[in-house]
Image 1 (tube, rainbow, N blue to C red):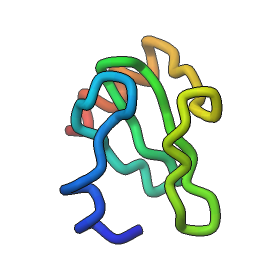
Image 2 (image 1 turned 120 degrees about the vertical axis):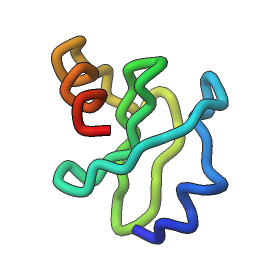
Image 3 (image 1 turned 60 degrees about the vertical axis):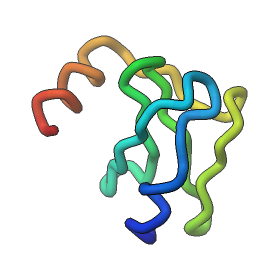
Length: 65
């Protein structure tokens, strides 16, 4: 994942900042609790493709930030 990409991509739902989860290969929107997959190095920024995160996952991401 090119970290420069994180500077320009935003959540397609709320236009907020995304965080990169290297282990799960996902871009995380903490506001909307959505995790967008990265497939073959390409972020899939479609809401229907995003995984809904649990509150526990979101809290875990917040504590890591």
